[in-house]
Length: 188
Picture 1 (cartoon, helix red, strand yellow):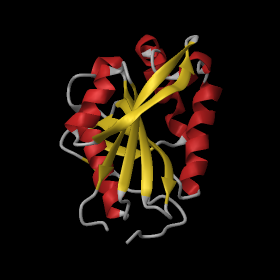
Picture 2 (cartoon, helix red, strand yellow):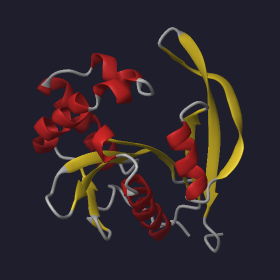
Picture 3 (cartoon, helix red, strand yellow):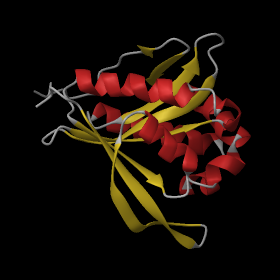
Picture 4 (cartoon, helix red, strand yellow):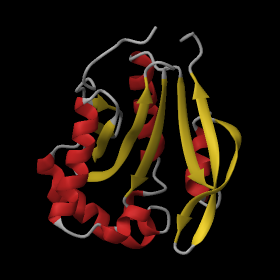
């Protein structure tokens, strides 16, 4: 069922308007710019944004996901527009449980790129990639009040499984998280 690998397969995932490839250290400057240009909107949902402000931070974040990728356990894919090559967001394969054929995804777009269908296209490409490599169950966790992320999960056909109360402490308060799953039919 699950094709085993020691390192995440290094493929470029290409859609109609975007391509995804694993982020590399040389992407650090562009990655920092993307986060800086969307800092206000990203900080609402991502705790790491507050302490992310230098090239060293960008390099370390990308490098940590590169190590995860080398272990065959996930990694960060940069989302680039095909027409100009601009880095517009990322999809993170946060963890992979090969024994249970499961993975978890996280994602963000720069604020100026939201609402144009890029996240839907990017996650669709990643779902196909994970199915190809034998994953059976994909999970997404979205803050209860993060309407865009919840809508994206539903639009992609993820099933709501329930709410995790007080799942995250952010900005001095606990946030509930909605849990979603996508099960690939035929990957039994």
